Amino acid sequence: MFTKEKIKDLHYSVTGKIAAEDLQKVADEVLTEFGKTAKMPGFRTGHIPLTVLRQKYNASAYGEAVDKALNNDLNTYLDEKKIRLAGQPKVDLEGWEIGKDVEYSMEFDILPTLPEIDLEKITVTKKVAKLDEKEVETALENIRKSRSIAEKQDEKYIAQNGDVAVIDFKGFIGKEAFEGGEASKHHLILGSGSFIPGFEDQVIGHKAGDEFDVNVTFPKEYHAENLAGKKARFEVKVHEVRKHILPELNDELAKQVGQETVEKLKEHIRTIISDQYTEAAQRDMREELLDVLADKVKLDLPEILVTQEYDMAKSEHEQHNAEHGHDHKWDEKKEKKDAERRVKLGLILAEWGSQNKVEVTRDDLQQAIWAEASRYPDPKQIFEFYNKNQNAVAMLRGMLFERKALDTMLTHVKQKEKSVPADELFK
Image (tube, rainbow, N blue to C red):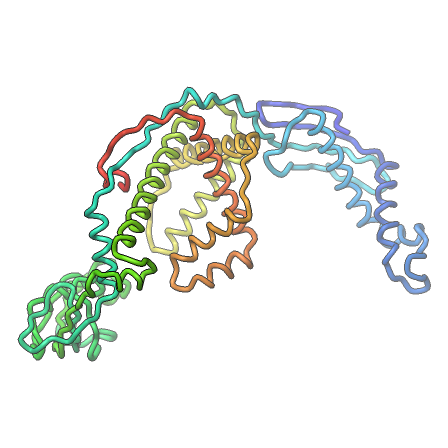
């Protein structure tokens, strides 16, 4: 049991003592349980005398007994004080020996008590935008483009932005051809930005059969260091030019994308856009509410959690610099403040969400994983990643919990509507 305590804010320093006879009782319980399945020459399984087990395994059993006794003392203390740990305690046993009383000291931080938050006194701005029919037309045009067919044009046709040019090219730095700068009958979508800046612009305006030079400069941060920042000349030959022919906007096209008619397709698009508006407005309200909580709620922070958050951010910063060859400076003062903000908001959302019975369901997790997987060419890899990585699932669950807690909070605050242009929602 603890014999002394020293409390400073959320930091506790305690000392305690465990009697040797109590430790041996626990050690004997450990040995007895172990002896039920242990095998030893000359004895039947489950019939090894305790004295024999002590001779061979008492040291390890004693160590386990100390751990159990420490945990019991700590849990009893936490229950009595009605406090919760913020992290793993730091324990000093001051050199204990088997058969003697164990004197120890322990340091730990506890979680703060969340003050009452009167959400009804908080007002956030809900941005409302009128749906622009131009967005519907743009979406319809994108559907047509996605189902377009690139048809070969005659030799008089001049290549335009958006066309496909089938070309040969060979690149030179000075008079020397460079490795990887040559291809035959490459299909280049003009205006796609897939080639070096300026290359595609110089192909536009040419027609099948043309042979010409393209002069460009490689970007300074080009992935191949031997080419970065250098001027290059490409010999180019156009074999053919293909123009994208868009299908007609009719009910047949609508059926290809899962809708019965063009009108139903338009309504479906309007619903999607409206949902995007709603989610964008909700995202802004979440951010505004987080700013209010960070500013208005007074909360002492466990130093251990702030240190962990700060150290993790610094490690990620250093790793990013190393992986990308950057030398971005670390602003210690700013990063410490940001770490404190993240810890504070995390504690507020965790405690408030728990008090108000916010839960992340299995369906919530599955929907989130499906949504993430749908953004990748091979969704199966995302499913396998989460199946094999429970830490990633736990992190995702934590993110979903915080979002649900925030959204639940938003149902209690006052919302003041403000009409804005649609593009302001997506800044």
